[in-house]
Length: 139
Image 1 (cartoon, rainbow, N blue to C red):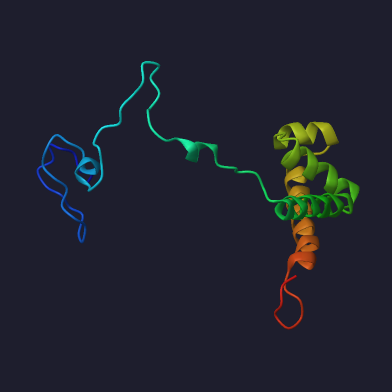
Image 2: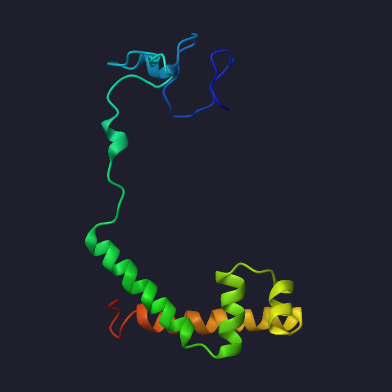
């Protein structure tokens, strides 16, 4: 049950009991000023430097991401043409099974079967690279 100021009970076992008043629970915490204040333009006042956090990848993460992307592209390129075409059209281009079937000139059932086989072949190729080495170590 979610607590509201008018709720008759609180069913949060092991949790602190929220106050029964019109003020929010956060307003009763030590150091809290209660409701936020807003400027005339509708934005909240106060320190918002946390909004400027750098969410970009580190150079190492970016390099690993590029390497992984290149590995996946090589694995896809190594698939037989009839598997690669269906995989690219369905999973990368986002076509439906019916649209893919029309493009490759096959039945929908054939497209679904080839897509499954292509995904399994791609999974096997990637598992060989990313999977555990002998002795339980990972790469």
